[in-house]
Length: 163
Image (cartoon, rainbow, N blue to C red; front, side):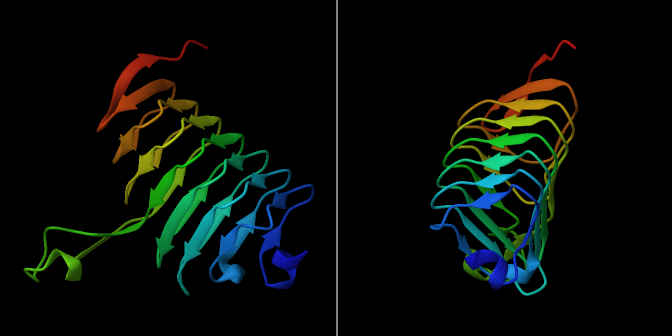
């Protein structure tokens, strides 16, 4: 109830653990029957947006740094514990010589039917298409095509998913 009263849009049978930390709750949309487990941090800025579709979940200790960007997670997505989604990050390239004053921004979009193993990091500008599995401890940047298993740092295609 606390989240709804603060402005989070929550679909039917969805839930957020009481320890979830939400910045700018009016910019957070939780789909029907989705669950955000304990100690997850969701940080959209004033102009950022977080959306998670139906029947999806984020396991405990997720960290979602969105800032002015959009993080969109589709339907039937399972995100393992200790996963990090970074839409806004320091960058070593830029006009300023100090990387602490250069930033990289990019939306992150996940399709449907995705499984992300524990302790993965998803970087700015990533698009993950439908029916994808990502091995634990992977670092993902760029586009992951549908119907494949990916893993590693950086994540690379491992094998096709047979349908």
